[in-house]
Length: 120
Image (cartoon, rainbow, N blue to C red):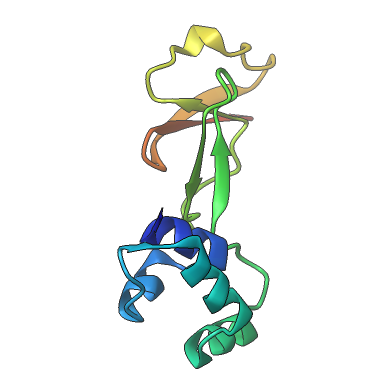
């Protein structure tokens, strides 16, 4: 059995769309395979409307331990130099290059901090 969230990831649709179109909270691999083989009209339309400019899901990966999480990208996310789990200390990352300042951005995915090194 897979969750609705995992189905949304595999179908490359937002979780909100999966809920709106009544995908069950849990489904079998066979049920998901059937949706992929014979997509409903709303899924066909969604895929046809996609511009390709903004991904529906991104994989976040901790640069310290390698932990990964799939998340919906946010417009306000800057370009990160590093991503770390929120429990890692800054001493576990390389220092910022000379002349760059470091900013931490909380609230990335469920458990990440984004690190941005940029010129002041």
